Picture 1: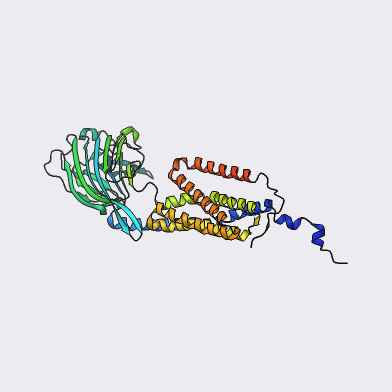
Picture 2: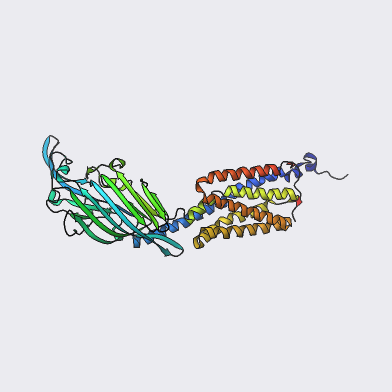
Amino acid sequence: MSAIDPAQTAHPSFRPSLHSPGVKFFVICGLTLALMIPMLFVWMLIEDREAHEAQVVQEVAESWGAAQSIAGPFLVVPFRGSFTNTQNGVTTNVSRKDFLIVLPEEMNATSRNEVSLRTRAIYEVPVYHADMLIEGRFPAREKIMDRLPEGYQPQWDDAFVALRVQDPTGLRDVPGLRLGAAPEPIDFVPSLNLPQSDGYGGLHVPLSDGALEEALTYSATLSFNGTQSLSVAPVGQTSSVHMASDWLHPSFGGGYLPDTYVLSAAGFEADWSVPYVARSYPQSWLYSEQNISPLFGKAVKVGFVEEADNYQLVSRSAKYAILFLATAFLAVFLLELQAGTRVHAVQYVLFGFGLVIFYVLLLAFAEVIGFAAAYAVASIAVALLNGGYVTAIFGQARRGAIAALSLLGLYGLLYVILQVAAYALLVGAMTAFGALAVTMYATRSVDWSGVVGGPSE
């Protein structure tokens, strides 16, 4: 008698079940999740290249001028007083000096910005040159006296006007500060002239005696360079800002959207009006209680950057990786069920690697030729690669063409999703629903416990 295989006796249906469509479906689901591991490395690569771009931007900013923030001019009035201090039963008179920060009653800023691109290696950094006029009015001495603490005497001879500039190295021409009806402007002096303000860039102008007998008008003209963004603090009790530029893609932020703006082929123009009640800081305060940090809060801001740069677009496309891996695998699985040809798990993995390499190609080409052209190159390359591979697996060019066209359709859909960012979730949800519906319909008659077919050649 011939020997009987115990495995065949105990589990007569075990081996066929390993090749059933149901088991293969769960294997494909596992492979889809496993391929998210190489996708993590793709995301790390995107972050690394984005960090390298930020380093290049920083290097350009150091030589040209950083993102600029203008706050002021504001008035600084030194004052001194004495108070009694009792300690261990001993009372002494202590003299104290402080500064009163006084913001203008009116501030009007007008800026014209010319933007250009600085190229370093494969990177282009938007930089700008700005010509700005700031005008306004400071309150008279009587109003300032009302804001001083009781018992303190102002030192009017030491009062000065300060202007905060984020990066003074970007200044190119500062004619000075014109006060009242003075025929000539007063030259600015470097530094804010305030204690512990070395970390803040700025300029100041000493005031002459009697300058604040009445409300004092001022005007300052600045010419400076900057990188990527420009901010103006609304320091006036009533503030208005007008900006114009030849840049076609302004990004408005900083806490205040423009009241009106016009976009055209020549650039943009925008206007802001910010009332006192819309700010988060008062018109005056003691420097010892609060330095000038309130001026670093909300500001009128324009960014001179693309709405979504190459790295942002690549990163956004990678977020849909699992959806497209699963959809592409389902397309091959349906071809496998229809053809009756068994596709090995290793072949699914190689097919999946072809899908993952799409993002690496997209990132590499986007740095050189731009996102749109890179997307076309990567899509066609991956579609041809995986379409040819499917042709070899099934031995039919028709099935390879179906796979290639399916991939091109998926990548085309992804590109549409990236262009309509506001509706990305809606389009993505509809895509997932459609893929599930097609799969359910195409497999409605499949015997999930049967056998797919013979091994592929």
